Image (tube, rainbow, N blue to C red):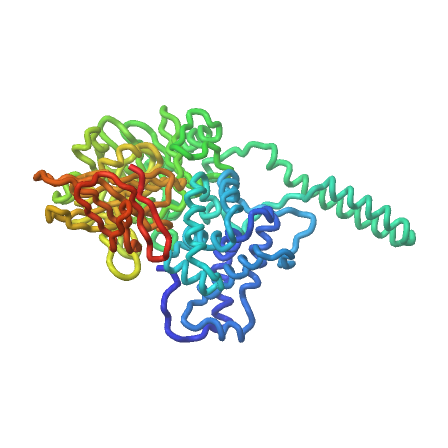
Amino acid sequence: MTDVQTLEHRSIGPAEAETALLENYAKLVRLAYLVLPPSLGRHRRILAAHGVVQHALPDRRKIERETADTSALSFLRRRVVQGAVRQSRSRTPLRLLPQVWGLRLFPKSGAADDLALDHALAVRSPEARAAWALVRAERLSIAEVEQELRAAGVRHPERAIAEAGELDEAAVAGIHGPLDAAVFDPCSVRLAPSDLMRRRARGRAVTICVTAVLVLAILLSLLVSGGRERAETTRVQSVQAPTLTQTTKLSPDALRRTGATRWQDTARVDFTAWPPRGGLVNDKALLARALDTWTAGKDVTAVVNTSLAAPTEEPQLLYAGEVDGKAVVVLHDGRRLARYTEGDGLVVARTDDADVTTAGAVALSRSAQGIRYLTAPWVATAGLRDLKKPDTPARDLGRQDGVTEPVQPPAANCSSWPALQLRSSSAVAEKHAFLLTDLGGLSPTHLTYMPPPSEGVARSPREATGGPALVSWSRTVCGLQTLQDKGIKTANNWVFAEQTLPDRTSADWVCTRSDSWEGSGWASVRLLPAGLVAGQATNTAICSRFDQNVLATTAWHAPSGGATYLLAAGSRHVDRIAVGPQTVQGRLVAIPGRTTAKVSAHLTNGTTIKPLNK
């Protein structure tokens, strides 16, 4: 749950607010960093982000006046958003603490990812950057984001949210660096000297001017001071130089190893909580070969949109053992998985922003017998089911030390589609079951489901383990065949409309959305159970939490014969649909004798949308 919720009427004391700031300091600085304009440069931007957060704590009277019905963290987050937006709009930026002289500060992160993100953020308004950061970094729902923006003083939060959706669609290549706390820590920075030539030139100019107006004693004092500064600069330069020239030698002795029970006592249940497993975790020669392969870049391949660069420091060891007659090592560098197979080389795949489900299993091997998975330490039970047979229960899946028996990949003709049905331990919150299926790569795809719309707040995706979800996926899963080996992280079936057809049978309008680890999105709308494709889109935010307004249309013939109909359906915020010159009130249309027409839909907020292309 997020911390944006209705609380009892009370005031937050200064001590509670200060404690919340200290406990969430890095998180709040990251939020400010994402909202501030990239044009500041990374040095000024990281300092300004720290300054915004340090100024987010007002005096005692203001806290007591503003914090009714909200948590301390929510109050501070609103103050940070408000301060970062104001700082972005300011023509004369405040001199925010801390101040650093003679050095440049750079947050440690994934350089290429940051550059792509900065380009996307730079062209958006501060309010849109705030909306985007609240969804992507703070994981708030759209309704919660609108509430937070209004509380922070944003006049038109709906516009900011719409612009944030465009940002997410435009920035589909490498945008996760600053969103991953394991990669981007705003409190961990690199130091480098400022422009040494410019500093020396300025020093000489100052010396000449001072010489003309000051006495000899003052001049000598300045020269001594300048000499000390140059000596300090030289020392900084000598420290930095090795990191620019030498190649890091990764050592198996320095591999990070998580404790066996760490996953039971952490709020971050992902790959960072995996302990090392397998019978070869102490085989230093094997681990050295895996690290050397990754460092050398030879025999290294990558899942689409994954960097091949070697890690800059020792990664985390997840597994080392023998699988189907070959030694296998699995490593994690905070944002990528790497699987080394003796004799076959090393494969790298993105896994940034993983969670309890998307970090639920890793493919250890692929052979004629099938795929063997290593399940997460928090997986209590594992089953195997065929998505093409929704009424057939899952059978137990054999495991030994977390390694499963071979699982067949989906059949080429889609006659069967195996999926892992895993249930998490009661030690990690809900003890819920979830589905994962193979679409290539190292980590299987997480399947979810959104039921038909109802009144009130829009629902969020839920696990696809219930009866309606399984029936829905049995009808749409074959459409995932085109997404093999594209690094798909999650796929969701959203029933955005239900319609009684002219022959009095019931039909569902389902948007199947698939998202890759790097952000690309694919959407396809089908009319079920007829299986008619009513629209599709690539590199889009449609049917995601950033764009839940969808319109689709298709021609339909009754199975028993008779007239042809033009059908159209819109999502929950559609209040009328235009078909040519005709306007129909509501979200559903069935017009006899038509197969094509110009169709559009009007939303309750006054905007107009068009149907997905077929």
